[in-house]
Length: 337
Ligand code: PEP
Ligand code: MN
Image 1: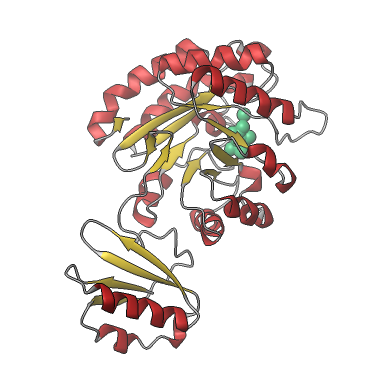
Image 2 (image 1 turned 180 degrees about the vertical axis):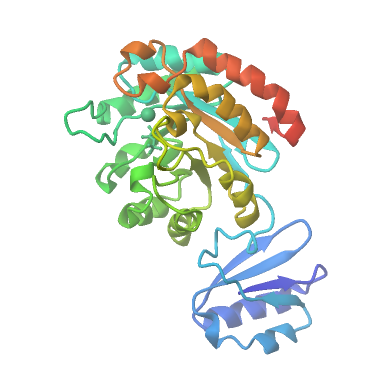
């Protein structure tokens, strides 16, 4: 249930209302936007007398919400959430590039790639330290040492970093990581979501390989119900019957999510296609569809990459994507900041 409060509100009456809701054992989510104040009620609202609430002087309207996700729902929070990572904003009119290798492989590799993608226009560095591989015999990532190398690259370049967490046991290692990534395979690892949610750090939440948009938003709800506010959703392709591409990019998810949620949404054209030559057209299509950013795999030597070489761009190819997208950005009223 949401309660829309009148613009000229009496603060004392509003506080009385909030106390009354809390006394009913319900959670309160307050959103003070430019045009209205919205009180979201979290929990079993069947005990709330809706007519009584509607009759209050400060109340403009009351609405029951059907969707099972509350905190992530745009009805709760009409204004776009803008996630600010060290001054780089995702959401609203802002657009960002996250780039870097699939996996951190060595100090030389991560620093070289970080410098190159920064030069080309990326503002956040990606790189996997803990890798979710289909085969237990494939490269599993440098793990703790990989996080250390990412922190070194952060120190050298000044770029904030995003990297994937696979287990709650390694949460301590993520203390200086700017954005914690929950990968596609862990989107519904609910214990991990709850623990990461409690850390209240920015999270990049990828869509599961075979998950609906509602399931994805429910995973965001897990993080938010524990207190996380800064969540960036990432569409990375879903599994379909089409074998030419690694996954199928669900472009329609972008404008749909803009209606359903206030959270920013970025696109990963690298994992969506699995093919480096498709990354540029899919990037441009994503910008056109209204995405708030792109996360792109870039490697200084793709044929020798330890993971996902076939979908990795060389730095100069990444620079070309940034150039081409800069023509589309103004058409969708987006700026890089
Ligand atoms: C990744 O970003 O490195 C990754 C493994 O992505 P996904 O979880 O989308 O497969
Ligand atoms: Mn990868």
